[in-house]
Amino acid sequence: MAIFFQVVLPVILVFFAGFVVQKFIRLEVKSISTVVVYILLPCLVFDTFYHAEFDNEYLMMLAFSVILLFSILLVNKVVAKIANYHTSIESGLILSTAFMNAGNYGAPIVLFAFGEQGFVYSVSFMVIQQIVMNFFGVYYAAKGAAGVRLALTTVMKMPPTYAVIIALLAKLMSVPISENIMSSITLVGDATIPIVMILLGMQLANITVKNLEWSKISYAATLRLVGSPLIAWGLTFVLPMSDLMANVLIISAAMPSAATTTMYAVQFDSRPDLVSSITLITTLLSVVTIPIVLNILT
Image (cartoon, rainbow, N blue to C red; front, side):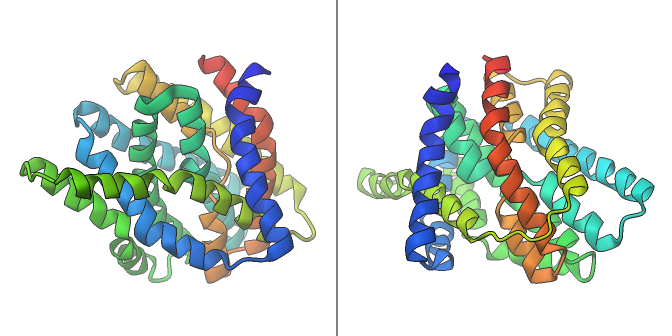
């Protein structure tokens, strides 16, 4: 219970603030999201990668992300085959279970639970997940129709992608950055997490669910909130990494469905009602499951 009040409740309260504001005022979520994607997040990503000390752990993080993704894809493929689900249902379930909310939910949880060093791991994992989600998320939302080309185009349009490239080049070439410029980058980057937390609350307020398909929702919620962290836990034994990094990756894998997947589902008509309902239910259930995972890890 102490972990809930110390780690989860502060995050939930910020989400709730965004939720309440959106319910009563109805702000333009897309405009705020654009500011985050094009200004705030690139600054946070640049600051993180420019100051990061790269070693084999980052390679392990990439391997972890890829293996976790394909493990969840395999589970969904098997279940869809057994249940004889239509392609659109299979795609909707993949969107809901393979991509976690590692950014505007996972990052603040990690910051409260594991401090600044854990947060550095979390931001790096968030960037990897964003790239993976832009590629595979779009691919499965489009049900394979021109998915690869569209996914690549989407990835290359994302400013955080260029922030990573520029930061890595500047770091490898030892390009000095003045204290004033770096202070500005850090100042803007520090605003990212609280803004995206509020933004998630606003996104959840916009989700509407009708005729809930509880059998599919139950399956997806179980895989996202229980199966995913269990797979992640197993991977941390196989892949060499520090205890702190392992804990960060496990708790990140235990996050609810990414809100971004709902936008993909709407855009490509990949069962948006199912995807949005799973996103909402997993977010609500995570209030219970995340403290349990944190208790086990700590």
